[in-house]
Length: 376
Ligand SMILES: NC(=O)c1ccc[n+]([C@@H]2O[C@H](COP(=O)([O-])OP(=O)(O)OC[C@H]3O[C@@H](n4cnc5c(N)ncnc54)[C@H](OP(=O)(O)O)[C@@H]3O)[C@@H](O)[C@H]2O)c1
Image 1 (spheres, helix red, strand yellow):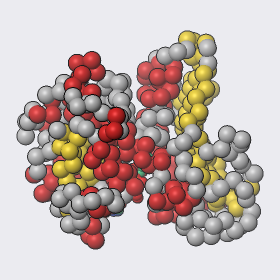
Image 2 (cartoon, rainbow, N blue to C red; image 1 turned 180 degrees about the horizontal axis):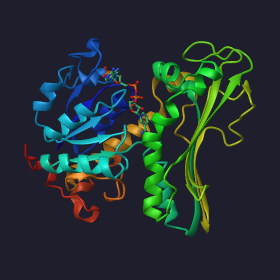
Image 3 (tube, rainbow, N blue to C red; image 1 turned 180 degrees about the vertical axis):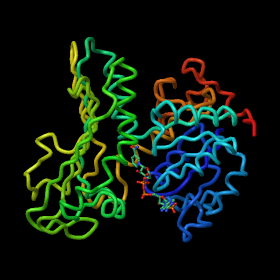
Image 4 (cartoon, rainbow, N blue to C red; image 1 turned 30 degrees about the horizontal axis):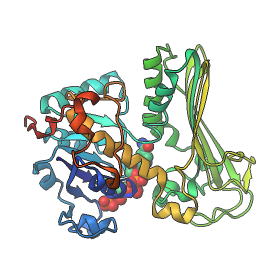
């Protein structure tokens, strides 16, 4: 079994713990928590299941010293010192916080560190990391003469259970003037920009040097109930960010998000349209294609705050990548380097002969990799 440490137990972390417990090739070795009140909690109980005898700890050094194959790293924000310490301790990392397709200098730095420690670093998630670049690349293989690629999210942000992020970082509820000073577009560009560059690199598009970043807001026309309290009329209630790769000034690759506090009381009167909340991928080529993902949004704000399907999808993309990442050659490994990553069937459908890693040669996976002790 591949031993996994979960790093932070927010929405992604708790869904990841469930995914690790249910995955036939993975074993939960421990978890780091930031919150003191979670220190010592049984990790089964932490996710609403029976106790499993593995406890959360705030002691990072203890986890670094522990024998484990992989860390699923999903705290509130990335601390690169911690990331480097985990890698140096001989553990692979899968994370939704970046490293989807690092630019050359950053990739070189982490490649060197990973090779010295004999480990792999892989960034993955849903958006960015997944629907913003992996899925467009898969779909692009059905088209010739591609002239445009777009990946776009349309979400009701009232279902996102991270109030500090929504209020203090995203600046929902702020004045439009305050939102205009938001650092979000540039902070998020760290992730979405990598998606745009990955598509450009894979498709062979010679983008202009700088991405085009745009940020628009809509304000409330009536009080809107939200997880961060009522949004008053005139305050920011919807935001649209676009990160675009251009060729001679014309956009050809777009990653975009439309985050609304509902669509009933907005000025300008933005709406989700008849298709509702969704993720969209569009390829303009010969032939073109448009793919719409539904089912990854909560049915209601209350349900989303308890367990948000988009957050679960983020966690599962990380969890399902682990066997492939552990088996990969040391270094930074992106979607362009790894074999096809698949999910795993529910326990009720599984045979007795083990999971697909039994057929690893077909998937390009080395089933013995997890049993090798990485050099310290
Ligand atoms: N790429 C994608 O598609 C994608 C999608 C969703 C989320 N994400 C990213 O994944 C990360 C986790 O998201 P989430 O929804 O799980 O967030 P969350 O629910 O806010 O959880 C974050 C966790 O981080 C820990 N934490 C809190 N304050 C901290 C601090 N000052 N320093 C270090 N850790 C701290 C806490 O862990 P404990 O509760 O264990 O104490 C908290 O529960 C975020 O960075 C988010 O942007 C990426």
